[in-house]
Structures are given as C-alpha cells and as structure tokens.
Amino acid sequence: MTSLFPALTSDPGDLVALRFGDRSLTYAQLAAAAGAVGDRVRGAAGVPPQERSRERVRVAVWATPSLETAVGVVGALLAGVAAVPLNPKSGEKELGHILSDSAPTAVLAAPGDELPPAVRDFARVDVDVRATGTIPDDRTAGDLDPALVVYTSGTTGPPKGAVLPRRAVAATLDALADAWQWTGDDVLVHGLPLFHVHGLVLGVLGPLRRGGSVRHLGRFDTEGVARELNAGATMLFGVPTMYHRIAQALSSEPELAAALGRARLLVSGSAALPVHDHERITAATGRRVIERYGMTETLMNTSVRADGEPRAGTVGVPLPGVELRLVEEDGAPITSYDGETVGEIQVRGPNLFTGYLNRPDATTAAFTADGWFRTGDMAVRDPDGYVRIVGRKATDLIKSGGYKIGAGEIENALLEHPGVREAAVTGEPDADLGERIVAWIVPEDPEKPPSAAELADHVAGRLAPHKRPRVVHHLDALPRNDMGKIVKRALSHD
Image 1 (cartoon, rainbow, N blue to C red):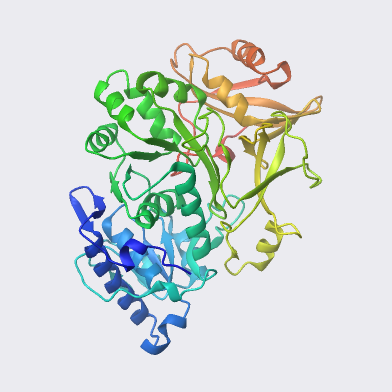
Image 2 (image 1 turned 30 degrees about the horizontal axis):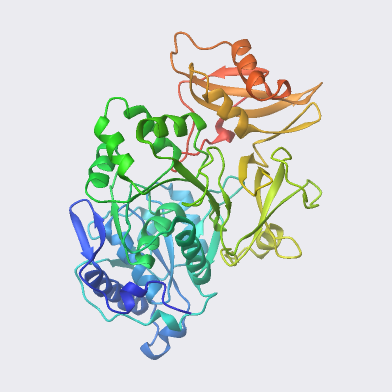
C-alpha cells in the first residue's frame, strides 16, 4: 500500500506539522524523530534488523496531549508496529487488563512522565522529539497489518481491544478528505484527548496524511480556540461539551464569535450536539457545525459534507466506500426510509476493524454472516439518505405503549426548554406501557426547576404525546465520561 503519511516519507520540508502549546515540529523534524522512535521500538522488541519489517509487535503509548504522544504513534506506524494508546486517567485495574491483553513489548512515554505501577513492569522508551533516525519505508506494510489497538470503554465488561488495520486508517481519512474538502492547506485546531480515535486518528493522523498542520490546545478553552482561529487555523474539531461551552461564551466573547465565523469547517463528534447549541452558534457566527458518526470499531461511517446541507440533528450521509443499512429487531433490512422508522445501524467497508484482540467469540458476535458490523446504534434515515442517531440499542431504545422510541430525540426536545441546561432520557419498567420514559434534568435555575407536567407538555407539543416523559428527576450534573458522553448506567432509578 502507499505510505500512511506521504508528506513524511517522500520529501519532508519545513512546514510545521505539529504544534502543542509553544512546542512545534516541522515535517522534517517529525520525520527524523519518528524514525528514531521506530529504531528504538523495534530494538525493544528484540527483533533482528533483517527480520524487523516482517515482525508484528505492539507498543503501548502513554497518551498524554503532547508532542511525545504524536511522535510516538507516528514512529510506531512508520515502523510497521501497532500502537496501543493508554488513557492516563485509567485506573490500575483497567490498565492492568489492557496491558495484559495487548502484551506490548514497550511503553512509549514523554521523558519525566511518572507512570503508575501497572505500567512499570514493561520496558520504557522515552520519546525524544529532537532525536534523529532513518525514516523507514512503510509502503512495505500490508493493508491489513494492525496500525492501532484501541480499547473500548468496557460498558458491558472488561474493555476489548479493537484492532484497526492500516487500511481502515487510510480509508477513513481519505473519505473524510473527500467529504470535508480537506487538503494540505488546512490547519486544524482542537483540544481532544489522544487515547481515542477522534483526537488521535482524526485530529493528529488526519492532518499529517493530508500534509497539513495541527495545533493542539493541550486543554480546551474558548480563548485558545479564538486565538488559533484568528491566527490562521481553518478547522475546529470538538465534542458537544466543548461546543456547549462555546455556545454559552459567545454572548460575552465577541472575539470568539468573529473567530468562529472565519473558520472553514466546524466539526462535532463522539456524541450528538443538541439542536439548540447548533442554533446558538449559527446565530452568533453565521457558521454551521457539521456532525459525523463513527465508532472505535468502524472509525468514520457518515458525515455531513462540506458541500452538502448542514442539517442540524443529523450525522449526514455515508462516506465514500461505506455501506450502511438499518435493520429491524429480527435483522431484516428496512428497505424504505421515511425519517421515522427506527432501526439498528449496520455497516460494511474498508474502514472497519479486523476483530477484537484475543476475543474471536466477541468478533464473531459483532458481525452478521454476510459481513455487516452490528453497531448497536439506533437511527432513522430520511428519504435522501441523511441519518439521524436516536440512541444506543442497549440504553436508548425505549419500547413504550407499542412504540419504539429513541431517547436522543426526546433529549433534544427537552434541551429546547429554557429551564433545562442538561438532559438525559432513559426507560424504566411500567406494568401498563412496558417501559415509561424517564427524564433526568439539570435545571438552569436549581431554585425554580421546570415541573414534570410542564416538561411533558413541552415534549408532547414538539414530538408526539407518546414520547412525553412520565417521570422527571432533577440533578446537579449528569455523569459523563472523558469524551463528554453521558454515562446512563450511572443514572439510578432507586
């Protein structure tokens, strides 16, 4: 296959490839440092030089938001070694499981990073971003050779390692380049963590594959976003919590609104962006945030296109090369899309993982007999192909009074109420309805929260009477994970 990063392996120049705070590397410097990492990780594996290109090994990466993480991952990929990103916030038990399961030959880290006990039993390789080494020719690697092993969140058991081949990384990034008109002239700014596919694959490897630049904020803040967009950045990637903070800040930070108005592309992912945040940002900046849909196992499946209609509340259309269908509970494909019928998303394409590491049983269960991956996400699809996610099959599909209801659309309706700051919707058993709809609300004014009857009428007026919440709980905050997704299993009906 071709190189994952042609700008690094052909003729790297003086364009800045990576910038984290006040530290940066040009393409030439990154190529040299990545080559040095490749030499060290292959050496740590104990593989003779003449056999290294054929040896499949894995290295873990202590994935802090730093130059070292980016250099470590790129170095491993150029050397044909799979990288296993580690979340520095993971607990000892989770880290122990991931390291035992993936069995890395070494752990890459920034010099001076203090690693927890679970990591210290493995050979450590400090990443020197100013080192120089020989750039290997990664074109000798195969399409299906592992590039990354990214562990899922472990919501239904210990985290599983999704093995992402080089083909999947290339296919997703090239499909997004087509959808977003992404070129080497683009400068991306974001503050995403680097242990998930959003921040690492899209946010770091994406610009490098295009031959462009990435500026990482280290830690997200609206001042940093405005500064970088005013200084020539053309694209912003974020998750809904980040865009929510942006929406809240726009009225008091006119320079932020002006900066966002200059951006070529604003992209939100990892969870649904509430419609009211879409509207507030558009009203203040004149720019539409576009959404895309992906998973650890599939990388990116759909997106609103840069040249398409930025329809709030949807994740756009399937990306080039991706097949997508909705199926009924019995697995029968839905053949006519009306924007109302809810089904589970299944996908096929070169963007998919090859399996769960050491879990052939889980891999088999994840696919249909004819090769479709069962995402577990529920959606409706408009006649013109646009997809709207309504929730997860396990936690967000509510069967009430004979209807299949997606929690996501009710959450969006609740967020349109001026008295609601945050909202989550779940189902609980009901002797009459099968399940009743339960709303979990963070009110704008804790002293004067909206009543259950008020919210029920609000939802019924926007959607349909059978979608109104029957029970309302008030909370100080909703439980969220590192990517801003609501952790619904932490919401108790007791």
